[in-house]
Image (cartoon, rainbow, N blue to C red; front, side, top):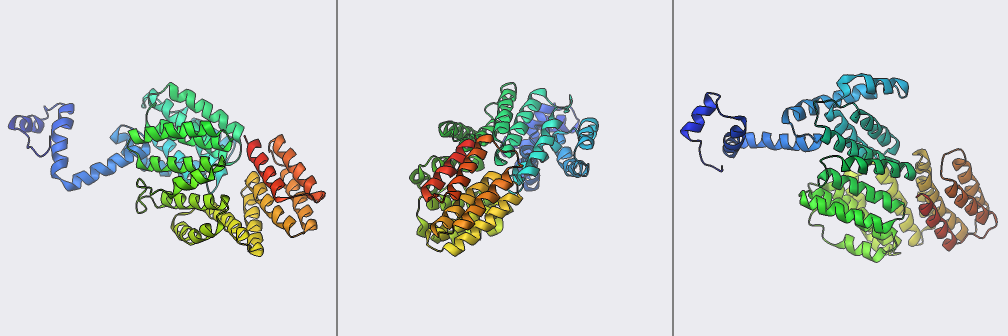
Length: 420
């Protein structure tokens, strides 16, 4: 309607309550928003809430977005196990769309810092979707369940439970196919997360295909943040498939779709990924030049787990610049932190870096002790049989004093492959 005023007839029908609902939306509301900056701000805030909650009804969005944090606190206060299961099933006040979405947002935010907590949050959301009643469109509920399963699968991926993650994504795709969400941001997000899983499984061609499909959908839905995430994802896939030059080239491009002021965390991730690409390419002087910038960016945006990974990068840079004492201190620190977080395979990969460093210095007794300690940590934990076999081979190589940098790289590659 632009800036045209209401006609006398429209004004009269509106004031007497005889204007139909769709006419109000079509004629009165656009005019009012055009004329009133304050109402435009309120409208924009409501649209943002709709996007965050993922619901089409403005009243539901407003009510449930306000109630969800309190409901989440109540749920968190319930002990794990049977009591929480009973509450999730029996407490009707928890069965809200807004609470499910809040749990999923928190899971995605926590996954890099505390993947175990991220899994619990997503698992609760998955279970809650089974109890959303007739107040919600069943097609949308199925779409929400698809998203919840994908977010739970993503947490399992970070925990290196790749088989369980695969099962969650199969269920997510099945739900998506029965919902009205195909072609939406939800499908783009699921594809984006699944691309990360395929990357960790070393199924790089599939990972790139899913990333490209997600990129198309994010563009169709005008989601610049999503576009930026997928480009970082593609660079990571190239890096892990040993196309290091391609990854660095992609990450060096100006990211016009990432505004450092609006998306500081995404911008920091882009620069960190470039740092890792340079390290893995053996371009340690260039990586060292970038390190200060990444440290500064991480001061304002990084989660604790991001800082652990940055410390690992610092160790690799120090090693590449022939500062072994500094590298060893970083590797030992990161190894301990990954074990504390129960991120066992990451701990094993850091241990391989440390092992090569010890081997190069002829510190065979320390090397043997490291291998035995690593096996002792992994023995009581549930890791894949193939990964255990790789670690046993590593231990034997250390014991027989035949570990080389190339052999350690082969062990690292085997560990990454066996995670899938």
